[in-house]
Length: 114
Length: 113
Image (cartoon, rainbow over all chains, first blue to last red; front, side, top):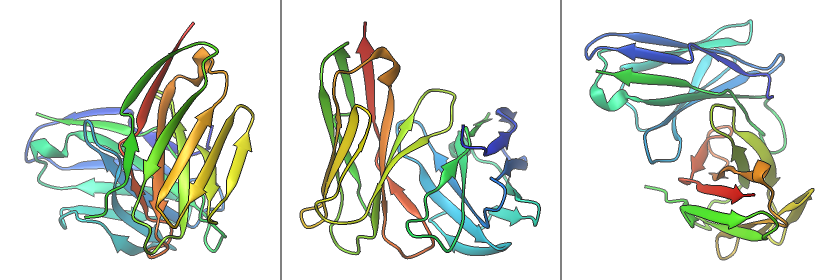
């Protein structure tokens, strides 16, 4: 196991609602990245937090936001949920600086929007 | 749009067979290539991180090679076992945002006893 945990495991929400997904990183890791895996696709980068600041964002709208806390936990918040937000959401933690930024993934949260 | 391609999409083999998959990626702005093994309902598990052209890495029966000039990596499994059944993902790191990965869609391997 990677030591990265995510909660909840599964979640069902209604279109228009808001959702918060949580991630607990490995102890000592100062960077967390979030990815979205839609059905039949590879994981897509949402954004990354480094030392509690957003450090890069993929092609996702502002209604996707995040927080990183000093205790190695982080959150992904999605407002105004759309049906296309149904996906598996993965978080990955790493320590920077490091040679090749090996990332450790959690098992994911499966979000279903109806 | 940055395309990381994996082939085949799925593979069914008998126990004891050897198999290999391909990961293709743009050769420009290469920093590292990651391979992950992902079993259903578990966390993706890092297999290899490869950085140098010509790199070869091995972990037990699994090995990987890297060609950064032509933009491809091969993953080999020798003597497949049912416990090797999983999805194998490759991911490109271009070194821009700290560790942002561009994933392929994966190769789903099923090994029949």
